[in-house]
Length: 154
Image (cartoon, rainbow, N blue to C red; front, side, top):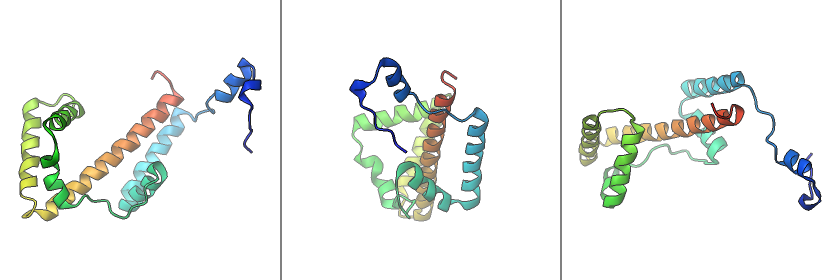
């Protein structure tokens, strides 16, 4: 049952108790939880991704793809500042990757985007993989945040 507290009537100790985080599971439990998520996604595929999207993000969608036309035209809608920010993000995201490799990757993506009409199926698959990667990154971020709550400073 939910306790209702009158904040202005609480002393410092009671306020600290009210604000304390609940006890966390162990690192072992976190590892089991992550393994269960990965196993479910591997076995159930998109159905598991949809279920986790509902659970973690409150998103109820059946479509896990960005339309090919949107992918192809997305880069054209960016301002120079946004394009530069995206380039900086890609460089950070790929960590120690060589700048030349990143430029080749960008060129390849732009080439694929330019060929979207001819390679519509490929663009759909790229969009699907990008969404899955973004979803996996959100899952990992949530798990890292959870792990940090369990084991601060680690």
